[in-house]
Image (cartoon, helix red, strand yellow):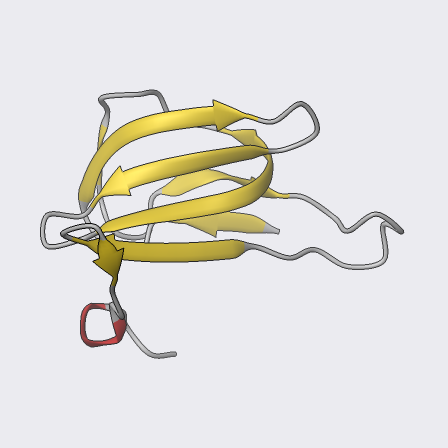
Length: 88
C-alpha cells in the first residue's frame, strides 16, 4: 500500500530503523510522523504536496496486512489534525 502526504509540507527528517522507515513532515501548523514504511520515495528538505507519494507501508510481522502509524504534534504537544485532513 502506498502512503501519501496528508497535506503540503517540507520533509524534516527520514529515519531508518533497520526493517522500517519513518518520515517527519513539517505541515506548517503541525508536524506529522508517518512510520512503519518499508521504503521511502522522498528526500530530507524536499517540498511536498498533499497527496504526494512518501513511500510504501510495511506489512506486519506475519505479512498478512499492512499498517501505518501516524503521530502529529504542535508546539511539543500531541495535535489532532482532523480539520486539515480530507475525509474520503
